[in-house]
Image 1 (cartoon, helix red, strand yellow):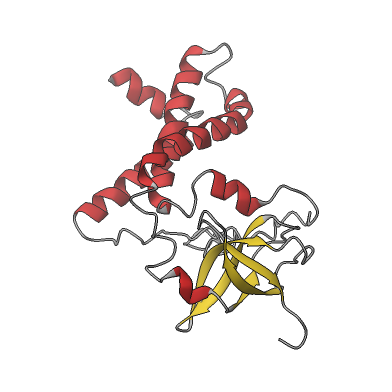
Image 2: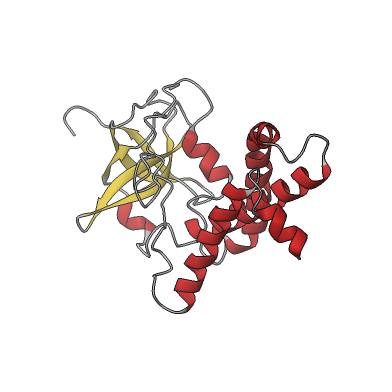
Length: 225
């Protein structure tokens, strides 16, 4: 136990340890009722635009203006179950996984225990942590399947105008913002292959849903609409 505490407090692991302590304090505060479960939640938009607002929003001025590319930040986040499971559940899995990997790697791998090794390990650790997070969060998806929609019936969105949160190419999956009772909500969308590429901030019309009901279908908004 003493060796574990020493390793957790060592320079290569201290950042992960601090993050883990923050996560633990969050869950303690939830248990005793000081903080609401959704206090740090995000909708895969994610409510605060990667300028690191409290809601950790991946707006992305990192948007990777690659409108013709199959890669999208929204798609990557969706793959790792962001928007399907409450944010703090995912962060708990991610931080805990990265902390365990860092402790193990710095204690057992050649060259471990140095700051240079910790920097080299950072990206592989993040990728491994995200993959572990995806696996661990899969059983929670059915429990929170209606979480991102805030309890609003999907049919309510059809026929409404939405605003693209990310550049999205032909027939690609993305994220869009739609107003419901005056409140901006985030939905997962798939673009009409005939509408061409959409830019961030461009308006689109919600015309239906995909067969699997996972995404809303949108098409370009005509000038007269």
